Length: 145
Image (cartoon, rainbow, N blue to C red; front, top):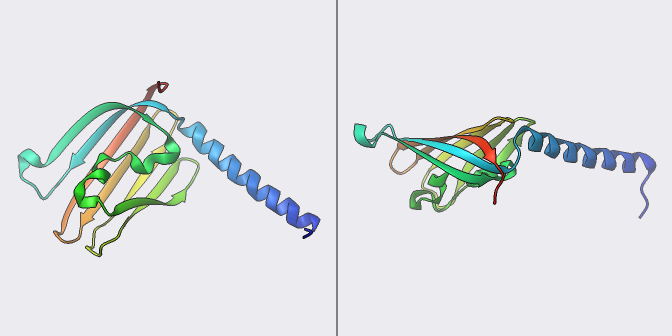
């Protein structure tokens, strides 16, 4: 199989562009140890259950942010995953995809910066017609051990 010179140049340009985009995103938010503040709100619940805040230190890789929301491991979302739909230099957008036909939907959008990673997850539980959100603000504090 032979390729014409313009085809090879085009393929090389595409590869270099993809590598360049990945390095720009990595510079915007490097992997490492982050202090994460996770706010969870459930507007449909009573006042004392309405809002919770958790702070923790955790290793994060900005290329794998779909697993950062702890609520994604809850039984109510066991058949759901966050699927990346868009990537720019300073943002990643995800859609919540669920199997099982229960009507749950949602999305997340991460803003990536050198001083912080900020991302809200908004979910509508289909069968119960309830909504909740999680908002993570993660600030780099060092290297992972």
